[in-house]
Image 1 (tube, helix red, strand yellow):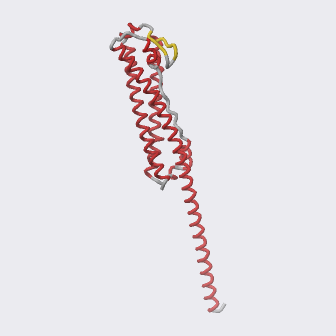
Image 2 (cartoon, helix red, strand yellow; image 1 turned 135 degrees about the vertical axis):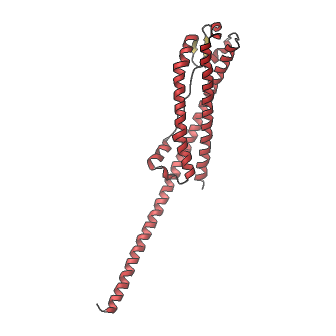
Image 3 (cartoon, helix red, strand yellow; image 1 turned 120 degrees about the vertical axis):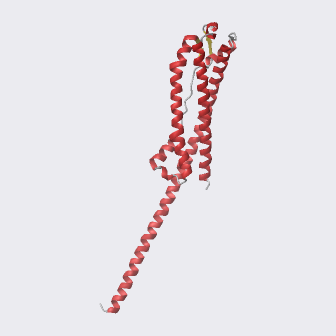
Length: 227
């Protein structure tokens, strides 16, 4: 090659290299753009599924609150009757029938489990990601522990006392004290009922707190999806 042809060749070679590099960069940019779109679609899909789960959780909490308040009301009425030594009347049979019982929150975690499998970083909003993990990993787990302890108390403490002193004709419908006069002076029985009232109030407070957390998370998700 003479000097002129060499210069032309080098210019041509450099041009080819630049074209190849530009092509590679464009391909990478398109690939990253596609990855970003796919990640965004996955995030939206998971958040939409989570909205459905959270609304189902709210419905379950509402049902549990209704039941828990019924138990609280019944225990309160019975304890008042015993403390004030009001003679037993048939109108109290419904409340005696609702002294025993606890609730169990059935959480829907399919969206959260999917999120775990894909990785929490799929949620681009840091605040939203923290609220999700706080609800599912902390609040829900704490509630489960409270309900487990409550269930143990119902079976280990409350139920034995009821079996000794209350005749149950129909659970959560009709029951009455075996010896009404004697039961009014039964300190142990009344203390078990008293503690059950405290427990019911505590569980109701926990449910209401988690309801607020769910409402907050639902609003955050809706805001994120409407960006």
